[in-house]
Image 1: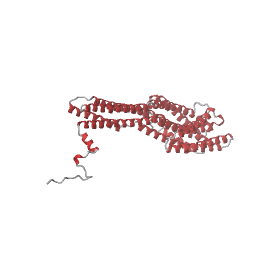
Image 2: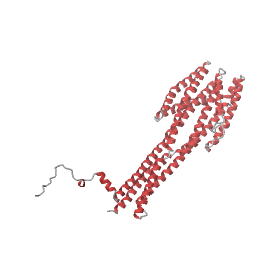
Image 3: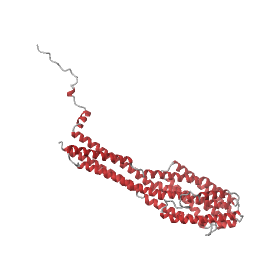
Image 4: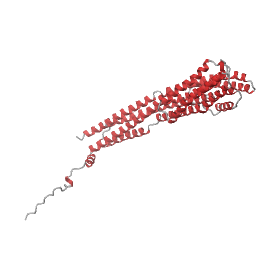
Length: 450
């Protein structure tokens, strides 16, 4: 009797051997073959090279932007903030000098005071217009813009009252100076500190070493060399021109990355150590000296009513003459003092000592009750042997040294952003060429299996 026929039920699953393999299984199967392994190796090598290039481009571009900020934004803003501080301190000293000279006030003294206030107001407006400042900078700017007209109004009131022969003029001037010393100059210092901190941040970012890009570049180069060694062992062929070209492109990108980094870092270091840092110290000296000069003049304006300004002079003079000063303006030149500033700094030191000596002579006369002799020794219209003349001569030399340090900063940092931008372009082009060469080298090996 014949066996009954077995019928296949509808919807029953096909045997495993008859199933179509899934995409993962096909990929795993293809990768297990020599051509599949070559394709996988090519993809990995190209990905490593391109990853290295992407990171190198990003880090170089970021550092280029930071270097551009040093040159065109935070660097000039930092110096502008210091100039605002110095101009305000000079305005205070000049206002006191003009008050002492009264009817004999030379036109240049009045013009100097007005120029100080006008320049400070202009720089404040420019700083406020650059919105990249910190919250601390914005608060300082707002306070300065509010208090500066108030100070100028008090000075004009003092002058008007003094012209009427009333003794209240000196009181108004001292009140104006208290506003300057107690409110305006501290805000100017906060602004200068905030902008200096911003400049330091840009310096750090521009000079940062590209460790991540370096590590990825070394990894990509090692992978290329390693795979060429494996191919040599399997095929006994010494060179794969595509992989060799890819290796050379990565090596060139690494070399360019290191050379550009070394050049930029060196220029930034020179600009900071021989330009920015000594300039900051010199700015501090000039402001302290101006405050001492203000105290010197206001002590005569007070006419013995208070010893406040004598104490201020003594404190500032002790600070200026301190043995630990490293600014090079009053003591020995520091090791980072640029050669172009050495001459002016030495001349300033001599003029500064003359100022101190003449002040002591005038102070002795004032203590002995000879106010007119003290005033003549301190400040006279057109006088060349006064304390004021010696101070102005020292300040001129400090200004010349500051100009030399600003020039060094500009020369050292100018073009650094271009070097880093070129480095980014080179890294991108070389790594794209390297990845293409590596894929071509793998493609030539794949062709042998066809």
